[in-house]
Length: 109
Image: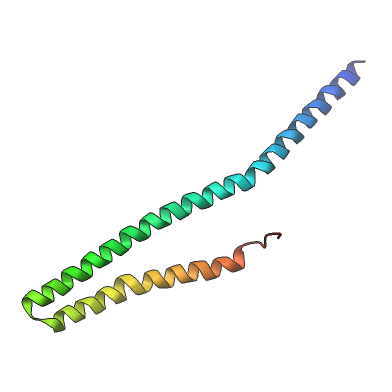
């Protein structure tokens, strides 16, 4: 009789663990959606800040060129900003998104 009681508690514990695993599996898609939403929120805010900084920087360079009448220096500065700040970020973002397509598993339709 003692062996049977131990077997019952093991089976009930196994059943409880199985139920817990199923609950966790069901919560995974929800968790993934929450992570995706937070990443999109962060990405949106970072991009807004990045664009605002670029616009302010470009306007300050253009205003400096306007007041100093040195358009050659202003155009060189804008070209330098574009090559050092914009192109690497665009390349990084495009590489991330196109590279991610190959890593993501296909979702059932």
